[in-house]
Amino acid sequence: MTYNFNEVIDRRGTNSLKYDFAKERGKPHDLLPLWVADMDFQAPREVLDTLVRCAQHGIFGYTETKDDYFNAVRNWFLCNFDFASQSEWLVKTPGVMFAVAAAINTFTQPGDGVLIQQPVYYPFFGCIEDCGRRVVNNALVYENGAYHIDFDDFERKLVQHSVTLFILCSPHNPVGRVWTADELRRLGEICLRHNCLVLSDEIHCDFTCVGYKHTIFGSWDEKLLDNTILCTAPSKTFNLAGLQVANIFIANEDIRKKFIQGIDRTGYSQLNTMGLAAAQSAYEHGADWLAQLRVYLQGNLAFVRDFLQQHLPQIKLVEPQGTYLIWLDCSVLGLAQQQLDELIVNKAKLWLDSGTMFGPEGKGFQRINIACPRAVLAQALTQLKEAIDD
Image 1 (cartoon, rainbow, N blue to C red):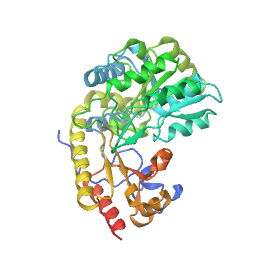
Image 2 (cartoon, rainbow, N blue to C red):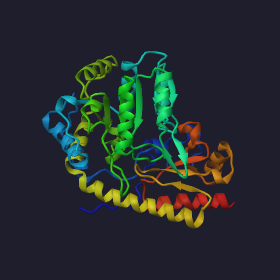
Image 3 (cartoon, one colour):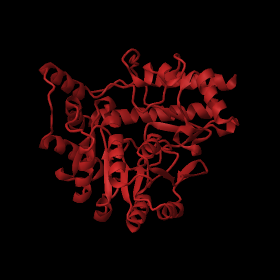
Image 4 (cartoon, one colour):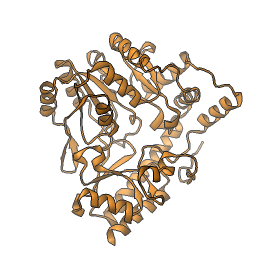
């Protein structure tokens, strides 16, 4: 089946967080939104058909999964990442951030430090602080238009702050790094030396650019995997975020039992009935849809690259290695962050994610979601060009 990702589907009036809540979030109502990380594409046809069958059945009682669900998930990660999981490792949660909060509350104490690498997905540090813990930042280093890890600072921060939990973003949101196996190995070995548990958020693992390969954290080393909470979900891959299903793999039995106890303390049990059906269907039948989508997104990335080079050379694309979120360096414009944000919102009439949302290291940057029809992306860039020219 051939999918038409150029089709513009009107999402307004559907209670879409992306399109319908500008006023509630303090934004003008007439903005073109390219912010929150969901896509403007319909899910795979097979998933839609599965949901229709569930709806027609008409009973939405408590639902659990059997072997066919695990097999669908396992086969996906085995075929795409050479990661062979076992059924007992799987813990299902209503989302990756739910798992992050459960891990923070289970494996750290109030006042403890939790390490992250800013600029990074902003709910991480919000969740850490809301749980009464301290953010410890191993800031990524931005040099020559690319980001890398300061490993000496990473180890120093672990020791100085007695950190027992590290939240890794892999691939990294928003800077788009796909960490190499060697980088992941170095992080894992440092954490092992200092008894620090790794929570690896790999929700964007299915989106890598041409020439890059995602490595499941710890998949090559039993000791590292035994010290890891691996967070995955079909939500970004198949545009199913609202159905709230995440698949968490924990090989270490003791860690897994404690994690499940942490979930039990929240009072949560069975997941969304429709979400489970959609997740299984997506992993069983969504490969062709995703392959076509990735080609389309590479086209969108090329479009942005060419547009900036030709019309907005002041704005530098931080070349992404993964995700469908791109990181724009606007520092050459010479604007303070508030001025930059006002330019984006009030003149360009765009709703993007301001760089400082991801930490102070994001000053001078904007994050833009390119998972939309190319005509929408072209309109957004044209509005940005006109605002800057003006």
